[in-house]
Image 1: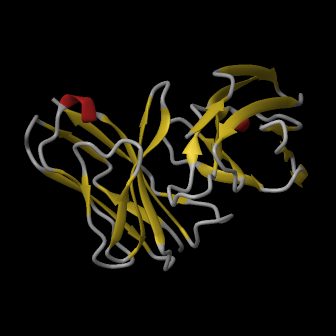
Image 2 (image 1 turned 30 degrees about the horizontal axis):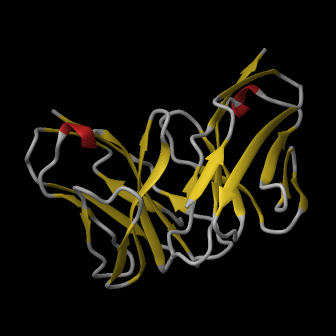
Length: 113
Length: 111
């Protein structure tokens, strides 16, 4: 089954404790992206990747890191999480940049205390 | 940059027709997407418009006017399961950021 998977689905952590949210897709998509979703603000892009070893900042990259060492994986790293990073996070992938729909993972609900 | 506006909430009755509008201002335009998102779930793709006109897909249709910076999503024969948030997203040009999303329209379908 073609899908995007994320882990963990739910996480409660404390300020300053490094964490990684994994994202993997099995559709051989070049493009992958991370979004956060907050009430009233919609989906905002954090980072994206056009292909292996190619990443760039989205609209809200502060406090986040990513890497793309393999085509299928695109982990999101929070080196020192803070309470304002409490949010619902989605990973997405697509086949090409123009005209192709993005497939979203199931989401990761993160709470930083 | 890009700015996308859509109503925050709408309510309609089961079996009715509802139109959800989206207006946008962009520095470049390379297509508009509509996604459906049920509470706590991932967005799922509904439609894509890049040329002016109406795209029909079953009970759902989407319209685009590039000159007016305007799109709408039309849902016919509403069902209770259509209660969800509907997200308008615009693909710009000159950047690889792909999509900018509106805040979404929460549709409630009443019996």
